[in-house]
Image 1: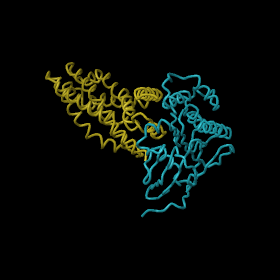
Image 2: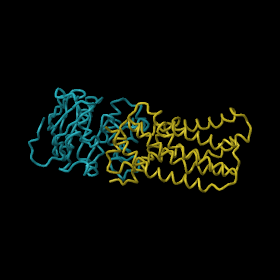
Image 3: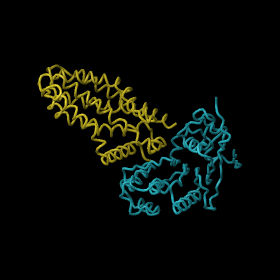
Length: 225
Length: 225
């Protein structure tokens, strides 16, 4: 497994974590150290444990072995601080089909901690415009196409002030333009000292991204008896 | 950062807005209750004395079953679309945030019952002295129904069809409410004191509304596995 060569204290450090799901070892003694300004792509076959690892990093799952540390502190001790710095978008996008795109953006901005949000604001329109959702803002999100729904979910990346992004398959159902747009946003985020951990089956096309790779090797998966 | 109350309010508003967009789902339990209450006189025969005698039991049993009908959806949609895991990832305490969802459930299922209670009393020929007691028992008892129900809903999140299991878990817990509520209404009909029963109902509600959120939050966090 990959070991970070950087000696500074990592922003997020998964220290020898293991995951056992349904009697199968998905990964064991895994090391991952994410520094500020880094982007990590976790790859691996279906069922290799990519999403499990991301949920562990986000603090939704407790590792079977090892621990995840944020700024050197175990997650359970700095949970509130950590969650203020974290933006997690799982493969379930948390978009409400009954709400319009604009309402979803508004709601996501409130969740992101924006207390000034009282109603739809000009910046929401800007975000919708950037993501090519203008003209669809009043439409119920449930009636939009899968790609458009994904774009609504990804508006959070434009609204959030979090420094660490954990993204599970952000490119799913996006078109070429959408993927390029998203990578542009990644670059902006990294240049501001943010970090990204993501999974994706497709290679990132933007060569400017200082991409680091971690491959989960499912061949290593052992069956527990 | 948004404080817990602001988050609480936005969760409540969002849930009510979604319910307004799916009116048939919200109205279904109430229609069920009205149908049960109107069918009983047809089935039993229009003897006013018998009806008045069994009215408290019928209304309360129908209220319990109507509550169970709507419970399945309480956390399920949010669980399926990923909104629930986003709530788990907020710095604000999850137990408190979830009470907003319970409050929304009560506003949509408990409060309409209280408002409908004069009509229900009239349909079953409940004496005038007893209908206010019925309204009071519903006002004091339905918050406990929603809070206990939410525990059941949270415990069965991971099950595909948890409906029957929720009923099995919850019905025994609902029985004390049923006993004290019906006895209060009967006593009121006979002109006896009802303060004792009402106090116990209020105590059950206070206890469940304050403690159930802890159980809900624990169950929801467990379901993230």
